[in-house]
Amino acid sequence: MKQTILTPKAEDSGKRADVYIAEQLNISRNAAQMLEAFCENKTVAKNYRIRSGETIVVSIPEPELIDSKPQELPVNIIYEDDYLLVVNKPQGMVVHPAVGNPDGTLVNALMYYCKSRLSSINGKIRPGIVHRIDKDTAGLLIVAKTDESHNALAAQIAEHSFTRRYVAVVYGRLKEDSGTINEPVGRNKNDRKRMVVTNTGSKEAITHYKVLQRYQGYTYVELTLETGRTHQIRVHMLHIGHPVVGDRVYAKGRDMLGLNGQCLFAKHIGFKHPVSDEWLEFEAEIPKFFVDLLHKIEKFKEI
Image 1 (cartoon, rainbow, N blue to C red):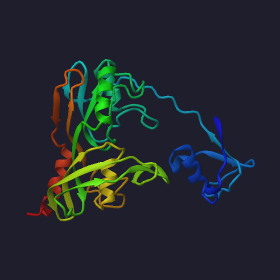
Image 2 (image 1 turned 30 degrees about the vertical axis):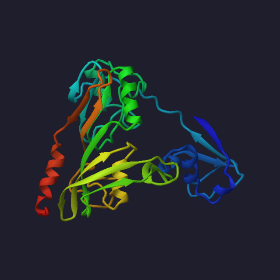
Image 3 (image 1 turned 90 degrees about the vertical axis):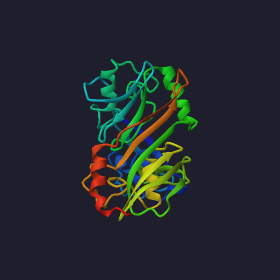
Image 4 (image 1 turned 180 degrees about the vertical axis):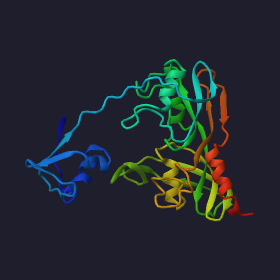
């Protein structure tokens, strides 16, 4: 157990203790509420209103050590060569181990399949992982086998030269046939696990959308990422009033239509091969849960 000493400034006066601690430690508010905090040797309640100049001592447990280990798990390989793989990740699978998900992840499966021959750029927890998609988002991911290919692929992501297209079913009827959402995305200051459109501590985020089919109460859309921020599509669609169907974080309280996660699928990916410079494009078939939802709302289809 280690201790961190925080000294609130004038602009922090009046904030709830859990909100202030979350901001200072860059963690979620829920995580902040789990920590012990003291002021003048007295326990600080989560709703305590802090004052400028006082000293807040926060006790932080030592981090849980996580190490990725090979596991024999099914993995859908779309393409493979000596330098990379393209994988179709199922809905519900976490990409790499973390606290709360120490195993059963895509990385565990890949370490077994590749005999641990994966790039080391992202360390022991995320070997081979160049980019990620959310646990409850299904679809295509590129995995690097060598450090050289990892660096080359990461450079393409940084310069936005990848092509990434998703399909989704969203709530409501989109009026325009196509459009662009250009709104910066950053962390929600009150809940560090959520993202939000904000001008504070944010990064540029651009999503292009095109309507594929309208239904009464729903719209089937194709979404092209120009940038790749955390939860970008989910946050952008919420921002324009059309959250993704089944999204348990950004569409809470709506009818989930029997889904176990958001109806969002990374269908297409295109990139330059890191060694040959050949342009490669891959497209995956829409998964069963997505097809089943389309059949379920078919009776609401607009002609």
